[in-house]
Image 1 (cartoon, rainbow, N blue to C red):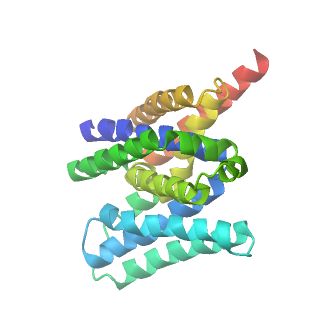
Image 2: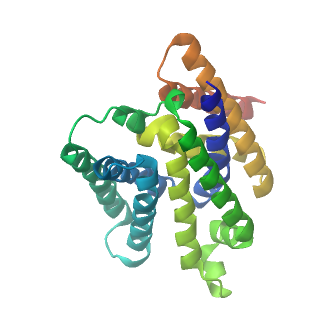
Length: 257
């Protein structure tokens, strides 16, 4: 449980900061494609006999770059191309697992999450990825802000908006790796969007939105964890449902007050 609570805090940092850009920039579908493609990296980790999260880092970064290229350079409709890459990533993960001798004991936890099984080594990896995300956001905060609200204007004034866009997708990819063991690749998109979507209703200041998203994400993630422990339910699904309930309650309060 100690590792589980620490993991809840670490994932809240990633999903709270990067999730704000995902919601504001409206790249939820691309983020979903990246998260599902990450399963290919997990399968590659099993096949190579290394930590699946370590293998998922470069694989997910490549998937993010591929989806960015699809959006910027290809004439294929964006949703069609992302859907193809989404399914290809999942299919590669399944192939790699099938090619691996023996049984993959933790495979379900990578699909649907199990925060109770997060080992200490994964906590260190989450902490490292959180640090990378925070440093990149701090150094490129003005560029990400311009890209999120007016990409065309940022290009006109000479900002390398395409390169910044790829960096933003890289942050999404790193956040996905942080979140995999908590809610799994199937449910990651909920943690990236729900806390940011709730806090966006209460502030238009991006810095405040990020801080509130991190705090809210930590509260909701730990709350869902406690509920899953009390009622003996799947932790990842319980966390997501608890967040969805908070979103509905927040929407109700905003509408009728």
